[in-house]
Amino acid sequence: MSKKKVTIVFDIGKTNKKFFLFDKNYQEVVREYTELPLTTDEDGYPTEDLPALQNWIKENFHNILENDEYEVKAINFSTYGASFVHLDQKGNVLTPLYNYTKPMDQEILDLFYEKHGDKLKISRETASPQAGMLNSGLQLFWLKYKHPEVFRKIRYSLHLPQYLSYLFTGICVSEFTSIGCHTNLWDYDKNDYHDWVYEEEIDVLLPPIVPTSASINTSYRNKKIKIGVGIHDSSSALLPYILSKKEPFLLLSTGTWSISLNPFNDESLTDEDIENNCLNYMRIDGKRVKASRFFMGNEYRIQVEKLCAYYGKEYGAHREVQFDQDLYLHLMKHKAVYFRFEGIILKRKMITETDLNSFSTFEEAYHQLMIELMDLQIHTITNAIGNSEIKNIYIDGGFTDNDVFMKLMSHHFQHYNVMSTHSPLGSALGASMVISNKKIDETFLQQHYQMKVLQPLIFNL
Image 1 (cartoon, rainbow, N blue to C red):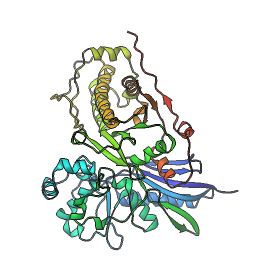
Image 2 (cartoon, rainbow, N blue to C red):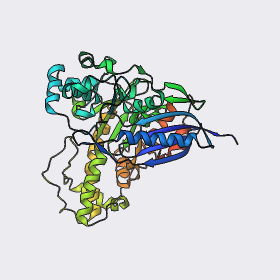
Image 3 (cartoon, rainbow, N blue to C red):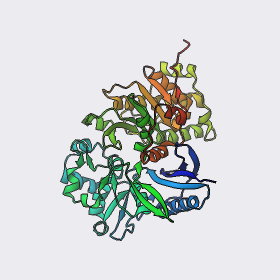
Image 4 (cartoon, one colour):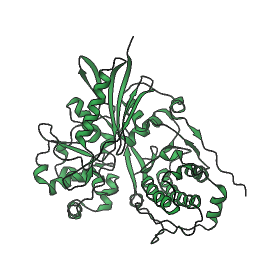
């Protein structure tokens, strides 16, 4: 019996670690999910357990190698961004994989702007709203001045997708999508590392840049396997759309973050864009993608937990709520802000505390929460569209299952062709496609993404 030829993709999210096998037509053959317990860094801050992640990857890889049904032709990696692994001369890992939510010392940030210029100017040039560790380049600056004895030992710093590739190849590389995701490293107008990177001599710690589609041929047990160099998950999730759609579009990727990605807007960012939490991601060809984001899923979870507690509901009750036109119209008649958001920094009316007394039911309060989140969603999508000619909006990720959210999207964007796309493959599929030379056409998304056109709401007034 001939073995099935497969590509392995390790898709590493902050919460779920996923392992996929794809056949030559990008059909999913195997999928495994796991959650790995976190560990802590030297300051006691929770972070990814890198040895546990390596063991999980190794185990899955060896299981497939020993399985008689499959012949592994290629491996690639998509992971969350803004996370560095620092290696010494011998390839040993020098530090924990610092969590991008770890607060950065104010005196280090002050020193950075004192040495390298205005915060807003650097944000604009690097298309990175300033956010401490979330700008992974600043992590290198932080190490240099906070832990100089460790910094001196660094030979190479690899973003997480490239580190996972290095585990298989022993070769250190950098690639565009990881460099270009809010890292503070890349000057988009200059198309090179930002001046501060050279001034601090950090460029010497960043390995040579290779294209995202590059791969390294290795041999395992006398079998040739092509190893990809890894890809940042947001750029990866966008890739199947870019490869199969010719018409300009915006992709709204929903989850912990709600990210509006516009690969058809390459304007330089303005100061106002930066203040509105706009940023750039990078396409695999190094072109910029205008994006705006807000911490929607995170806020949603915080507020829904409070709603459930207040109304005495089990957490999960919110998943059953269907859009109710009468409730919506009633709430819109007396439109006001009732929720105090905790994790969102976008400008909106600030209130001192959430007022739930105004709502008689869980469903009514839930509709109000979605209306207030949608106001911010409209704002971020409009920013990402900018002046580009976009007619199509694709929505993917966790909120495609949220009836109230999807109905409100179809209502507010009724002059667009709004489609929900359901693909549990997310960023894994892009990682598989980027190292293959196979061309795809318009029908590809239809087959893989269960696309549904959303009908605009018609209210029975």
